Amino acid sequence: MNNTPKFTAVLSSRCATPGTLPADARWTLTVAICPGRVSTWPSTAWPGGRHTPTVAERATRLAEFGFGIAPDDEWTWTEDVCGVHDDASPHVTLLAAVPVQRHGGAR
Image (cartoon, rainbow, N blue to C red; front, side, top):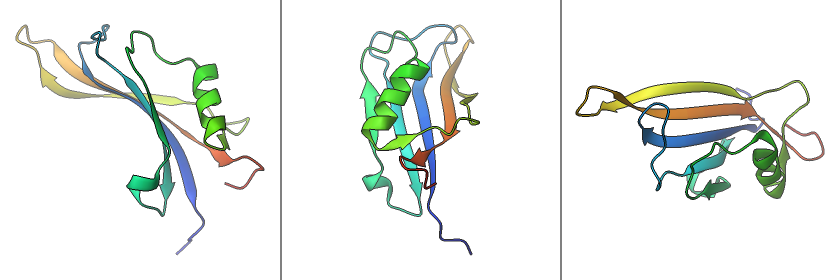
């Protein structure tokens, strides 16, 4: 078993109608540190999430946590259906993830 810490940055938005975000939506950026307790993971949110945080905005927040994305890594996106509106359009949760490393190169 390898006990080397692994780090993944996750950007998420709670359920929304596809193509729209409600005024109270928020994007949350979290760095998952495994092994480790969820309660100690660095996390931040962008209130009023009418726009998806840019790659530069995400990089700035990651740097504030002491992490960065390796040059060859990039964000991967997925969505998950988490309910249906009255008009039968789905609610979706949007997720993006990327491996990150501590500043100084240690993954």
